[in-house]
Image (cartoon, rainbow, N blue to C red):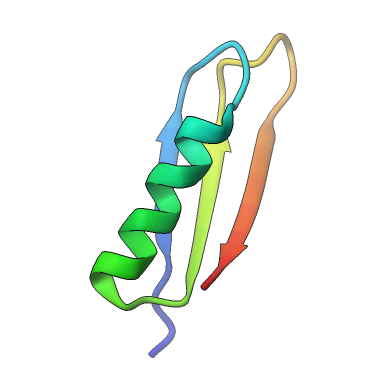
Length: 52
């Protein structure tokens, strides 16, 4: 309990491929919450939270 998956990327922008990947990680580990963080976007931090 109290665990999350964090995926860190350095891409120009996030796409459906990265979202699908973290959803698969959540299913495979039977964890409920994941956060996808992208530091590569032009001058801004981009992030998305996923709940399974």
